[in-house]
Image 1 (spheres, rainbow, N blue to C red):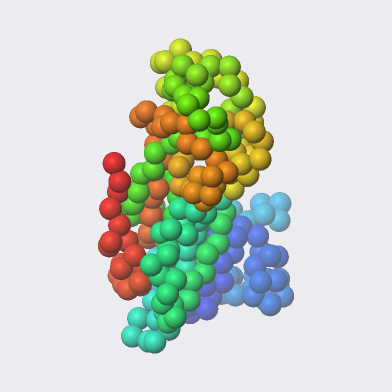
Image 2 (tube, rainbow, N blue to C red):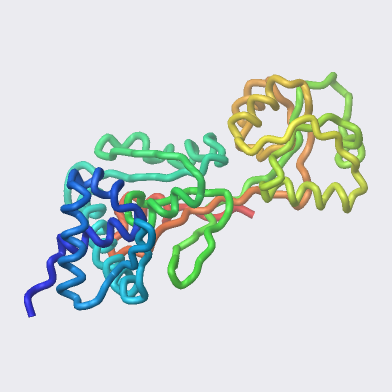
Length: 295
């Protein structure tokens, strides 16, 4: 048999992943007819159809799904090779490509990366997005690590390495109070206007359970998923805020906000999620190797 044409296989892989012939043709700077011809050539070589063509839509055949599994392994490994080369192993300049979920505290991320900032031979690239978007980019080795405030779901198709690297206390903060004016948690929370994380947050669910257990009836002034906005509301709204301490560390240090107390048994955990790779970047091994989960 002739050797497999990997260009044809790559075209098939791109179309199968995108699910749209026209978009892939535009991305590859090919005409749609030329791309179709390349895929038909692969089907002819393999002896079986890869797609069912239904109303101008492409649907993988069972055989096509099997070929896609092999193509995934081949091209993902190739992307890992290029990621290793770009990471600078054996070179002077290294690169670390980081994904950070949009709800992650930027203070936490900056604290985490601070030991690397003095390294002039390192190039950092940081992108934000949803956990789903970032994990897909991690899967194809466009990112080296994803930092998140919830663990990744691990299964046979996504065997992530998920390491908890820190756990932060959650506190109640607000405007400075008069000296000697004590605030007792949970008693004094009842009826207070509160800025809290949104319903999808683990912090919020744990805080709600704690309030229910303690018999606290809270008055929700605002609920916010984005930690940067929650920080601003905590600083400027005049309401109390339930927030991980790291989020408002600068405001507490400057005296703009006062810590009224810590919410017992409520924490935010932070995770480093990586793909299984033969050779992770040295700088990533160094960064994660010195981290220990707190609490």
